[in-house]
Length: 331
Image 1 (cartoon, helix red, strand yellow):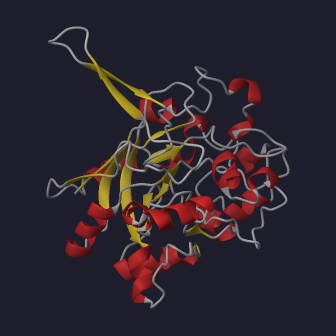
Image 2 (tube, one colour; image 1 turned 120 degrees about the horizontal axis):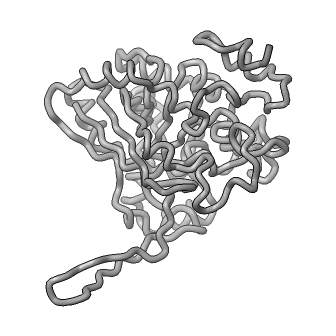
């Protein structure tokens, strides 16, 4: 019996994944999904979509994307905002193009090609040679052809920590413990459900956009940003709750610089101990970064409604590493 056969079903835990001895990386979901190109997006199936559709009551619609050019200068020094050019073949015609279009410079999804597991390969064992422009393996087109749809649940971590007397200081770039997710849900009176698309509000993206140039330059140069602590507890929370997508309004989901206590310092040497290899290359989690959560959080605080019908359909770019999230929530 293979590992996948021995642990198949709804009760496999992250602790089980850590005990893998079948050649796949410990802590990975390799071989467990019928459609591995979608990763944990598989958790949001037809049943979850049908239930989520019942959440549309008022006809309120929220875009969760910032403008493509919003982050200028972007937090990442290796990316830039695109340059938009409008052209015309004749007076009655207009076309346009984008130059320097980095697909992860504004609100986006990290695809399953974004990281590989050192010593093992890309998610589900896809070899390096299959990762090229135009090749389909693990490309973001898997989520465009079969969009990630289900119940989006807002977790207002910023509001939680402010209530607890420890408001987030984004200049300092604090680390957030995974247990804040359950505390936020309890504060809101929400239950986490299998297949949920989690939207974590910290306020970081809007803080960065509103910050004076001095503070922007400071955090960019020091690569310092609020995010989740590098800790197995976050991986366990995501897998054991069967989360299909994990999106935040932070720069990298996880805190930067990486904590000296990161358990991944030895396994993710090239990433200086980041969790991205664990989240993307091993678990297969679609990661959302720099999402625009301000309007939907304001509505949640005003109405006490924290969930929504959520559609995430990235670019249909065959072989894409990442993509603007193109996320829409409806209530």
